Picture 1 (cartoon, helix red, strand yellow):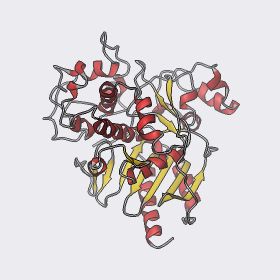
Picture 2 (cartoon, rainbow, N blue to C red; picture 1 turned 45 degrees about the horizontal axis):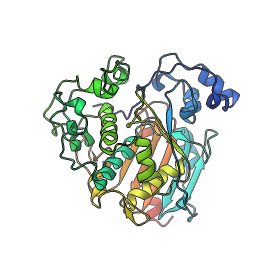
Picture 3 (cartoon, rainbow, N blue to C red; picture 1 turned 90 degrees about the horizontal axis):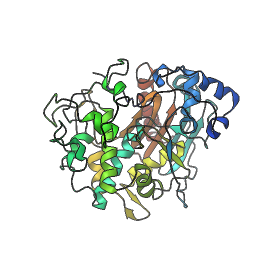
Amino acid sequence: MRKRNIAIGLFGAVVVAGGLGFASLDKETRGLLLHLPTNADALSWSQPQRDAAFRAMDRLTFLAKSSDIEPSSAPLALPPGKPLEIPGLDDYMAGQHSAAIVILQDGKVRLERYGLGFDRAGRWTSFSVAKSFTSTLVGAAIQDGAIKSLEDRVSRYVPGLRGSAYDDVTIRQLLTMSSGVAWNEDYEDPNSDVSQFNKAPPDPGLDAIVSYMRKLPRAHKPGEVWHYNTGETNLVGVLISSATGKTLSRYLQEKIWQPAGMEAKATWILAKTGQEIAGCCLQAETRDFARMGLFVLANGVAHGRQITPPDWFAEATHKQMDIGIPGRGYGFFWWTYDDGSVAARGIFGQGIFIDPRRRLVIATNSDWTRASLGPEPKEREEFYKQVQALVDAGG
């Protein structure tokens, strides 16, 4: 079973030098980016090229445009806490090829470290970590009354899906990746759906992702089989925009970024038809990714206002579907643990780990040697356990 948190085949990479964003990069970074393989995605880039690109995705003219998300005028303070001493941390960061680790407990910074020449003020791309933000916006839209119920059919909000295999699929089934619609998520197969869907020309008057997804056949009855599907996350983005009448960037700014006290501007890369790529490519400071963890721990309450329904995270961050791994599961675009912890995950080592019992948040940005295979994922899981044990021991 392949569970690759990949949302990269969404755009080709043809480098066009020039433009303020590109010119603002240092000479070495520009040189690395100018030699990215033509018409390739991030899986084909060398690790030094990824090191350069992941911190600059929203400033490069070879990618699609991005929308800005403005920060809060009253950022949520992250005061220093008791320093957390982690044996072997330097070796761990080297093995992860880590750009950033921020560990919060009780809203205080217990550890903050950077690598790869990255720093606190830099924006690193999220990859599939963005999926968990997208699902939270569904909760906000329900709280606002823009979405009536998770049991509503997707086609109620996205009319272009009427008559397709998605006509009987509910919003809940999209959020749990259990639509039953056939989909190939193999990024090493150039003919897979995830490699092809953003290249397909859109039907007249339809969003490109809707045009592609409406042609897919059914493989299973809705709600029965979990199957990881990046394309469906992008459908949820279209659904949110349709229901609220707002772009994802604007809605994120209004419902999470500013209420939750994010400190810095973020950006969200757009697909070729102008819709934010809901399953990928939210660029932000690592501290603000960590603040998202605090928003979850606060049960969607910010400045005394309930942004999501009171029971939203009780459902969203708990196991809704079995994924075939003991002790793990899938919620609403969140990866769950049977101990109550939950994680947002993106390829190459991006993540937000949230442990409600310990009031613990671990935000990481990295550039692994491979997208989701290799030793790094297991090592990160062991790191989470190490931090939990240190906290339990009073470290």
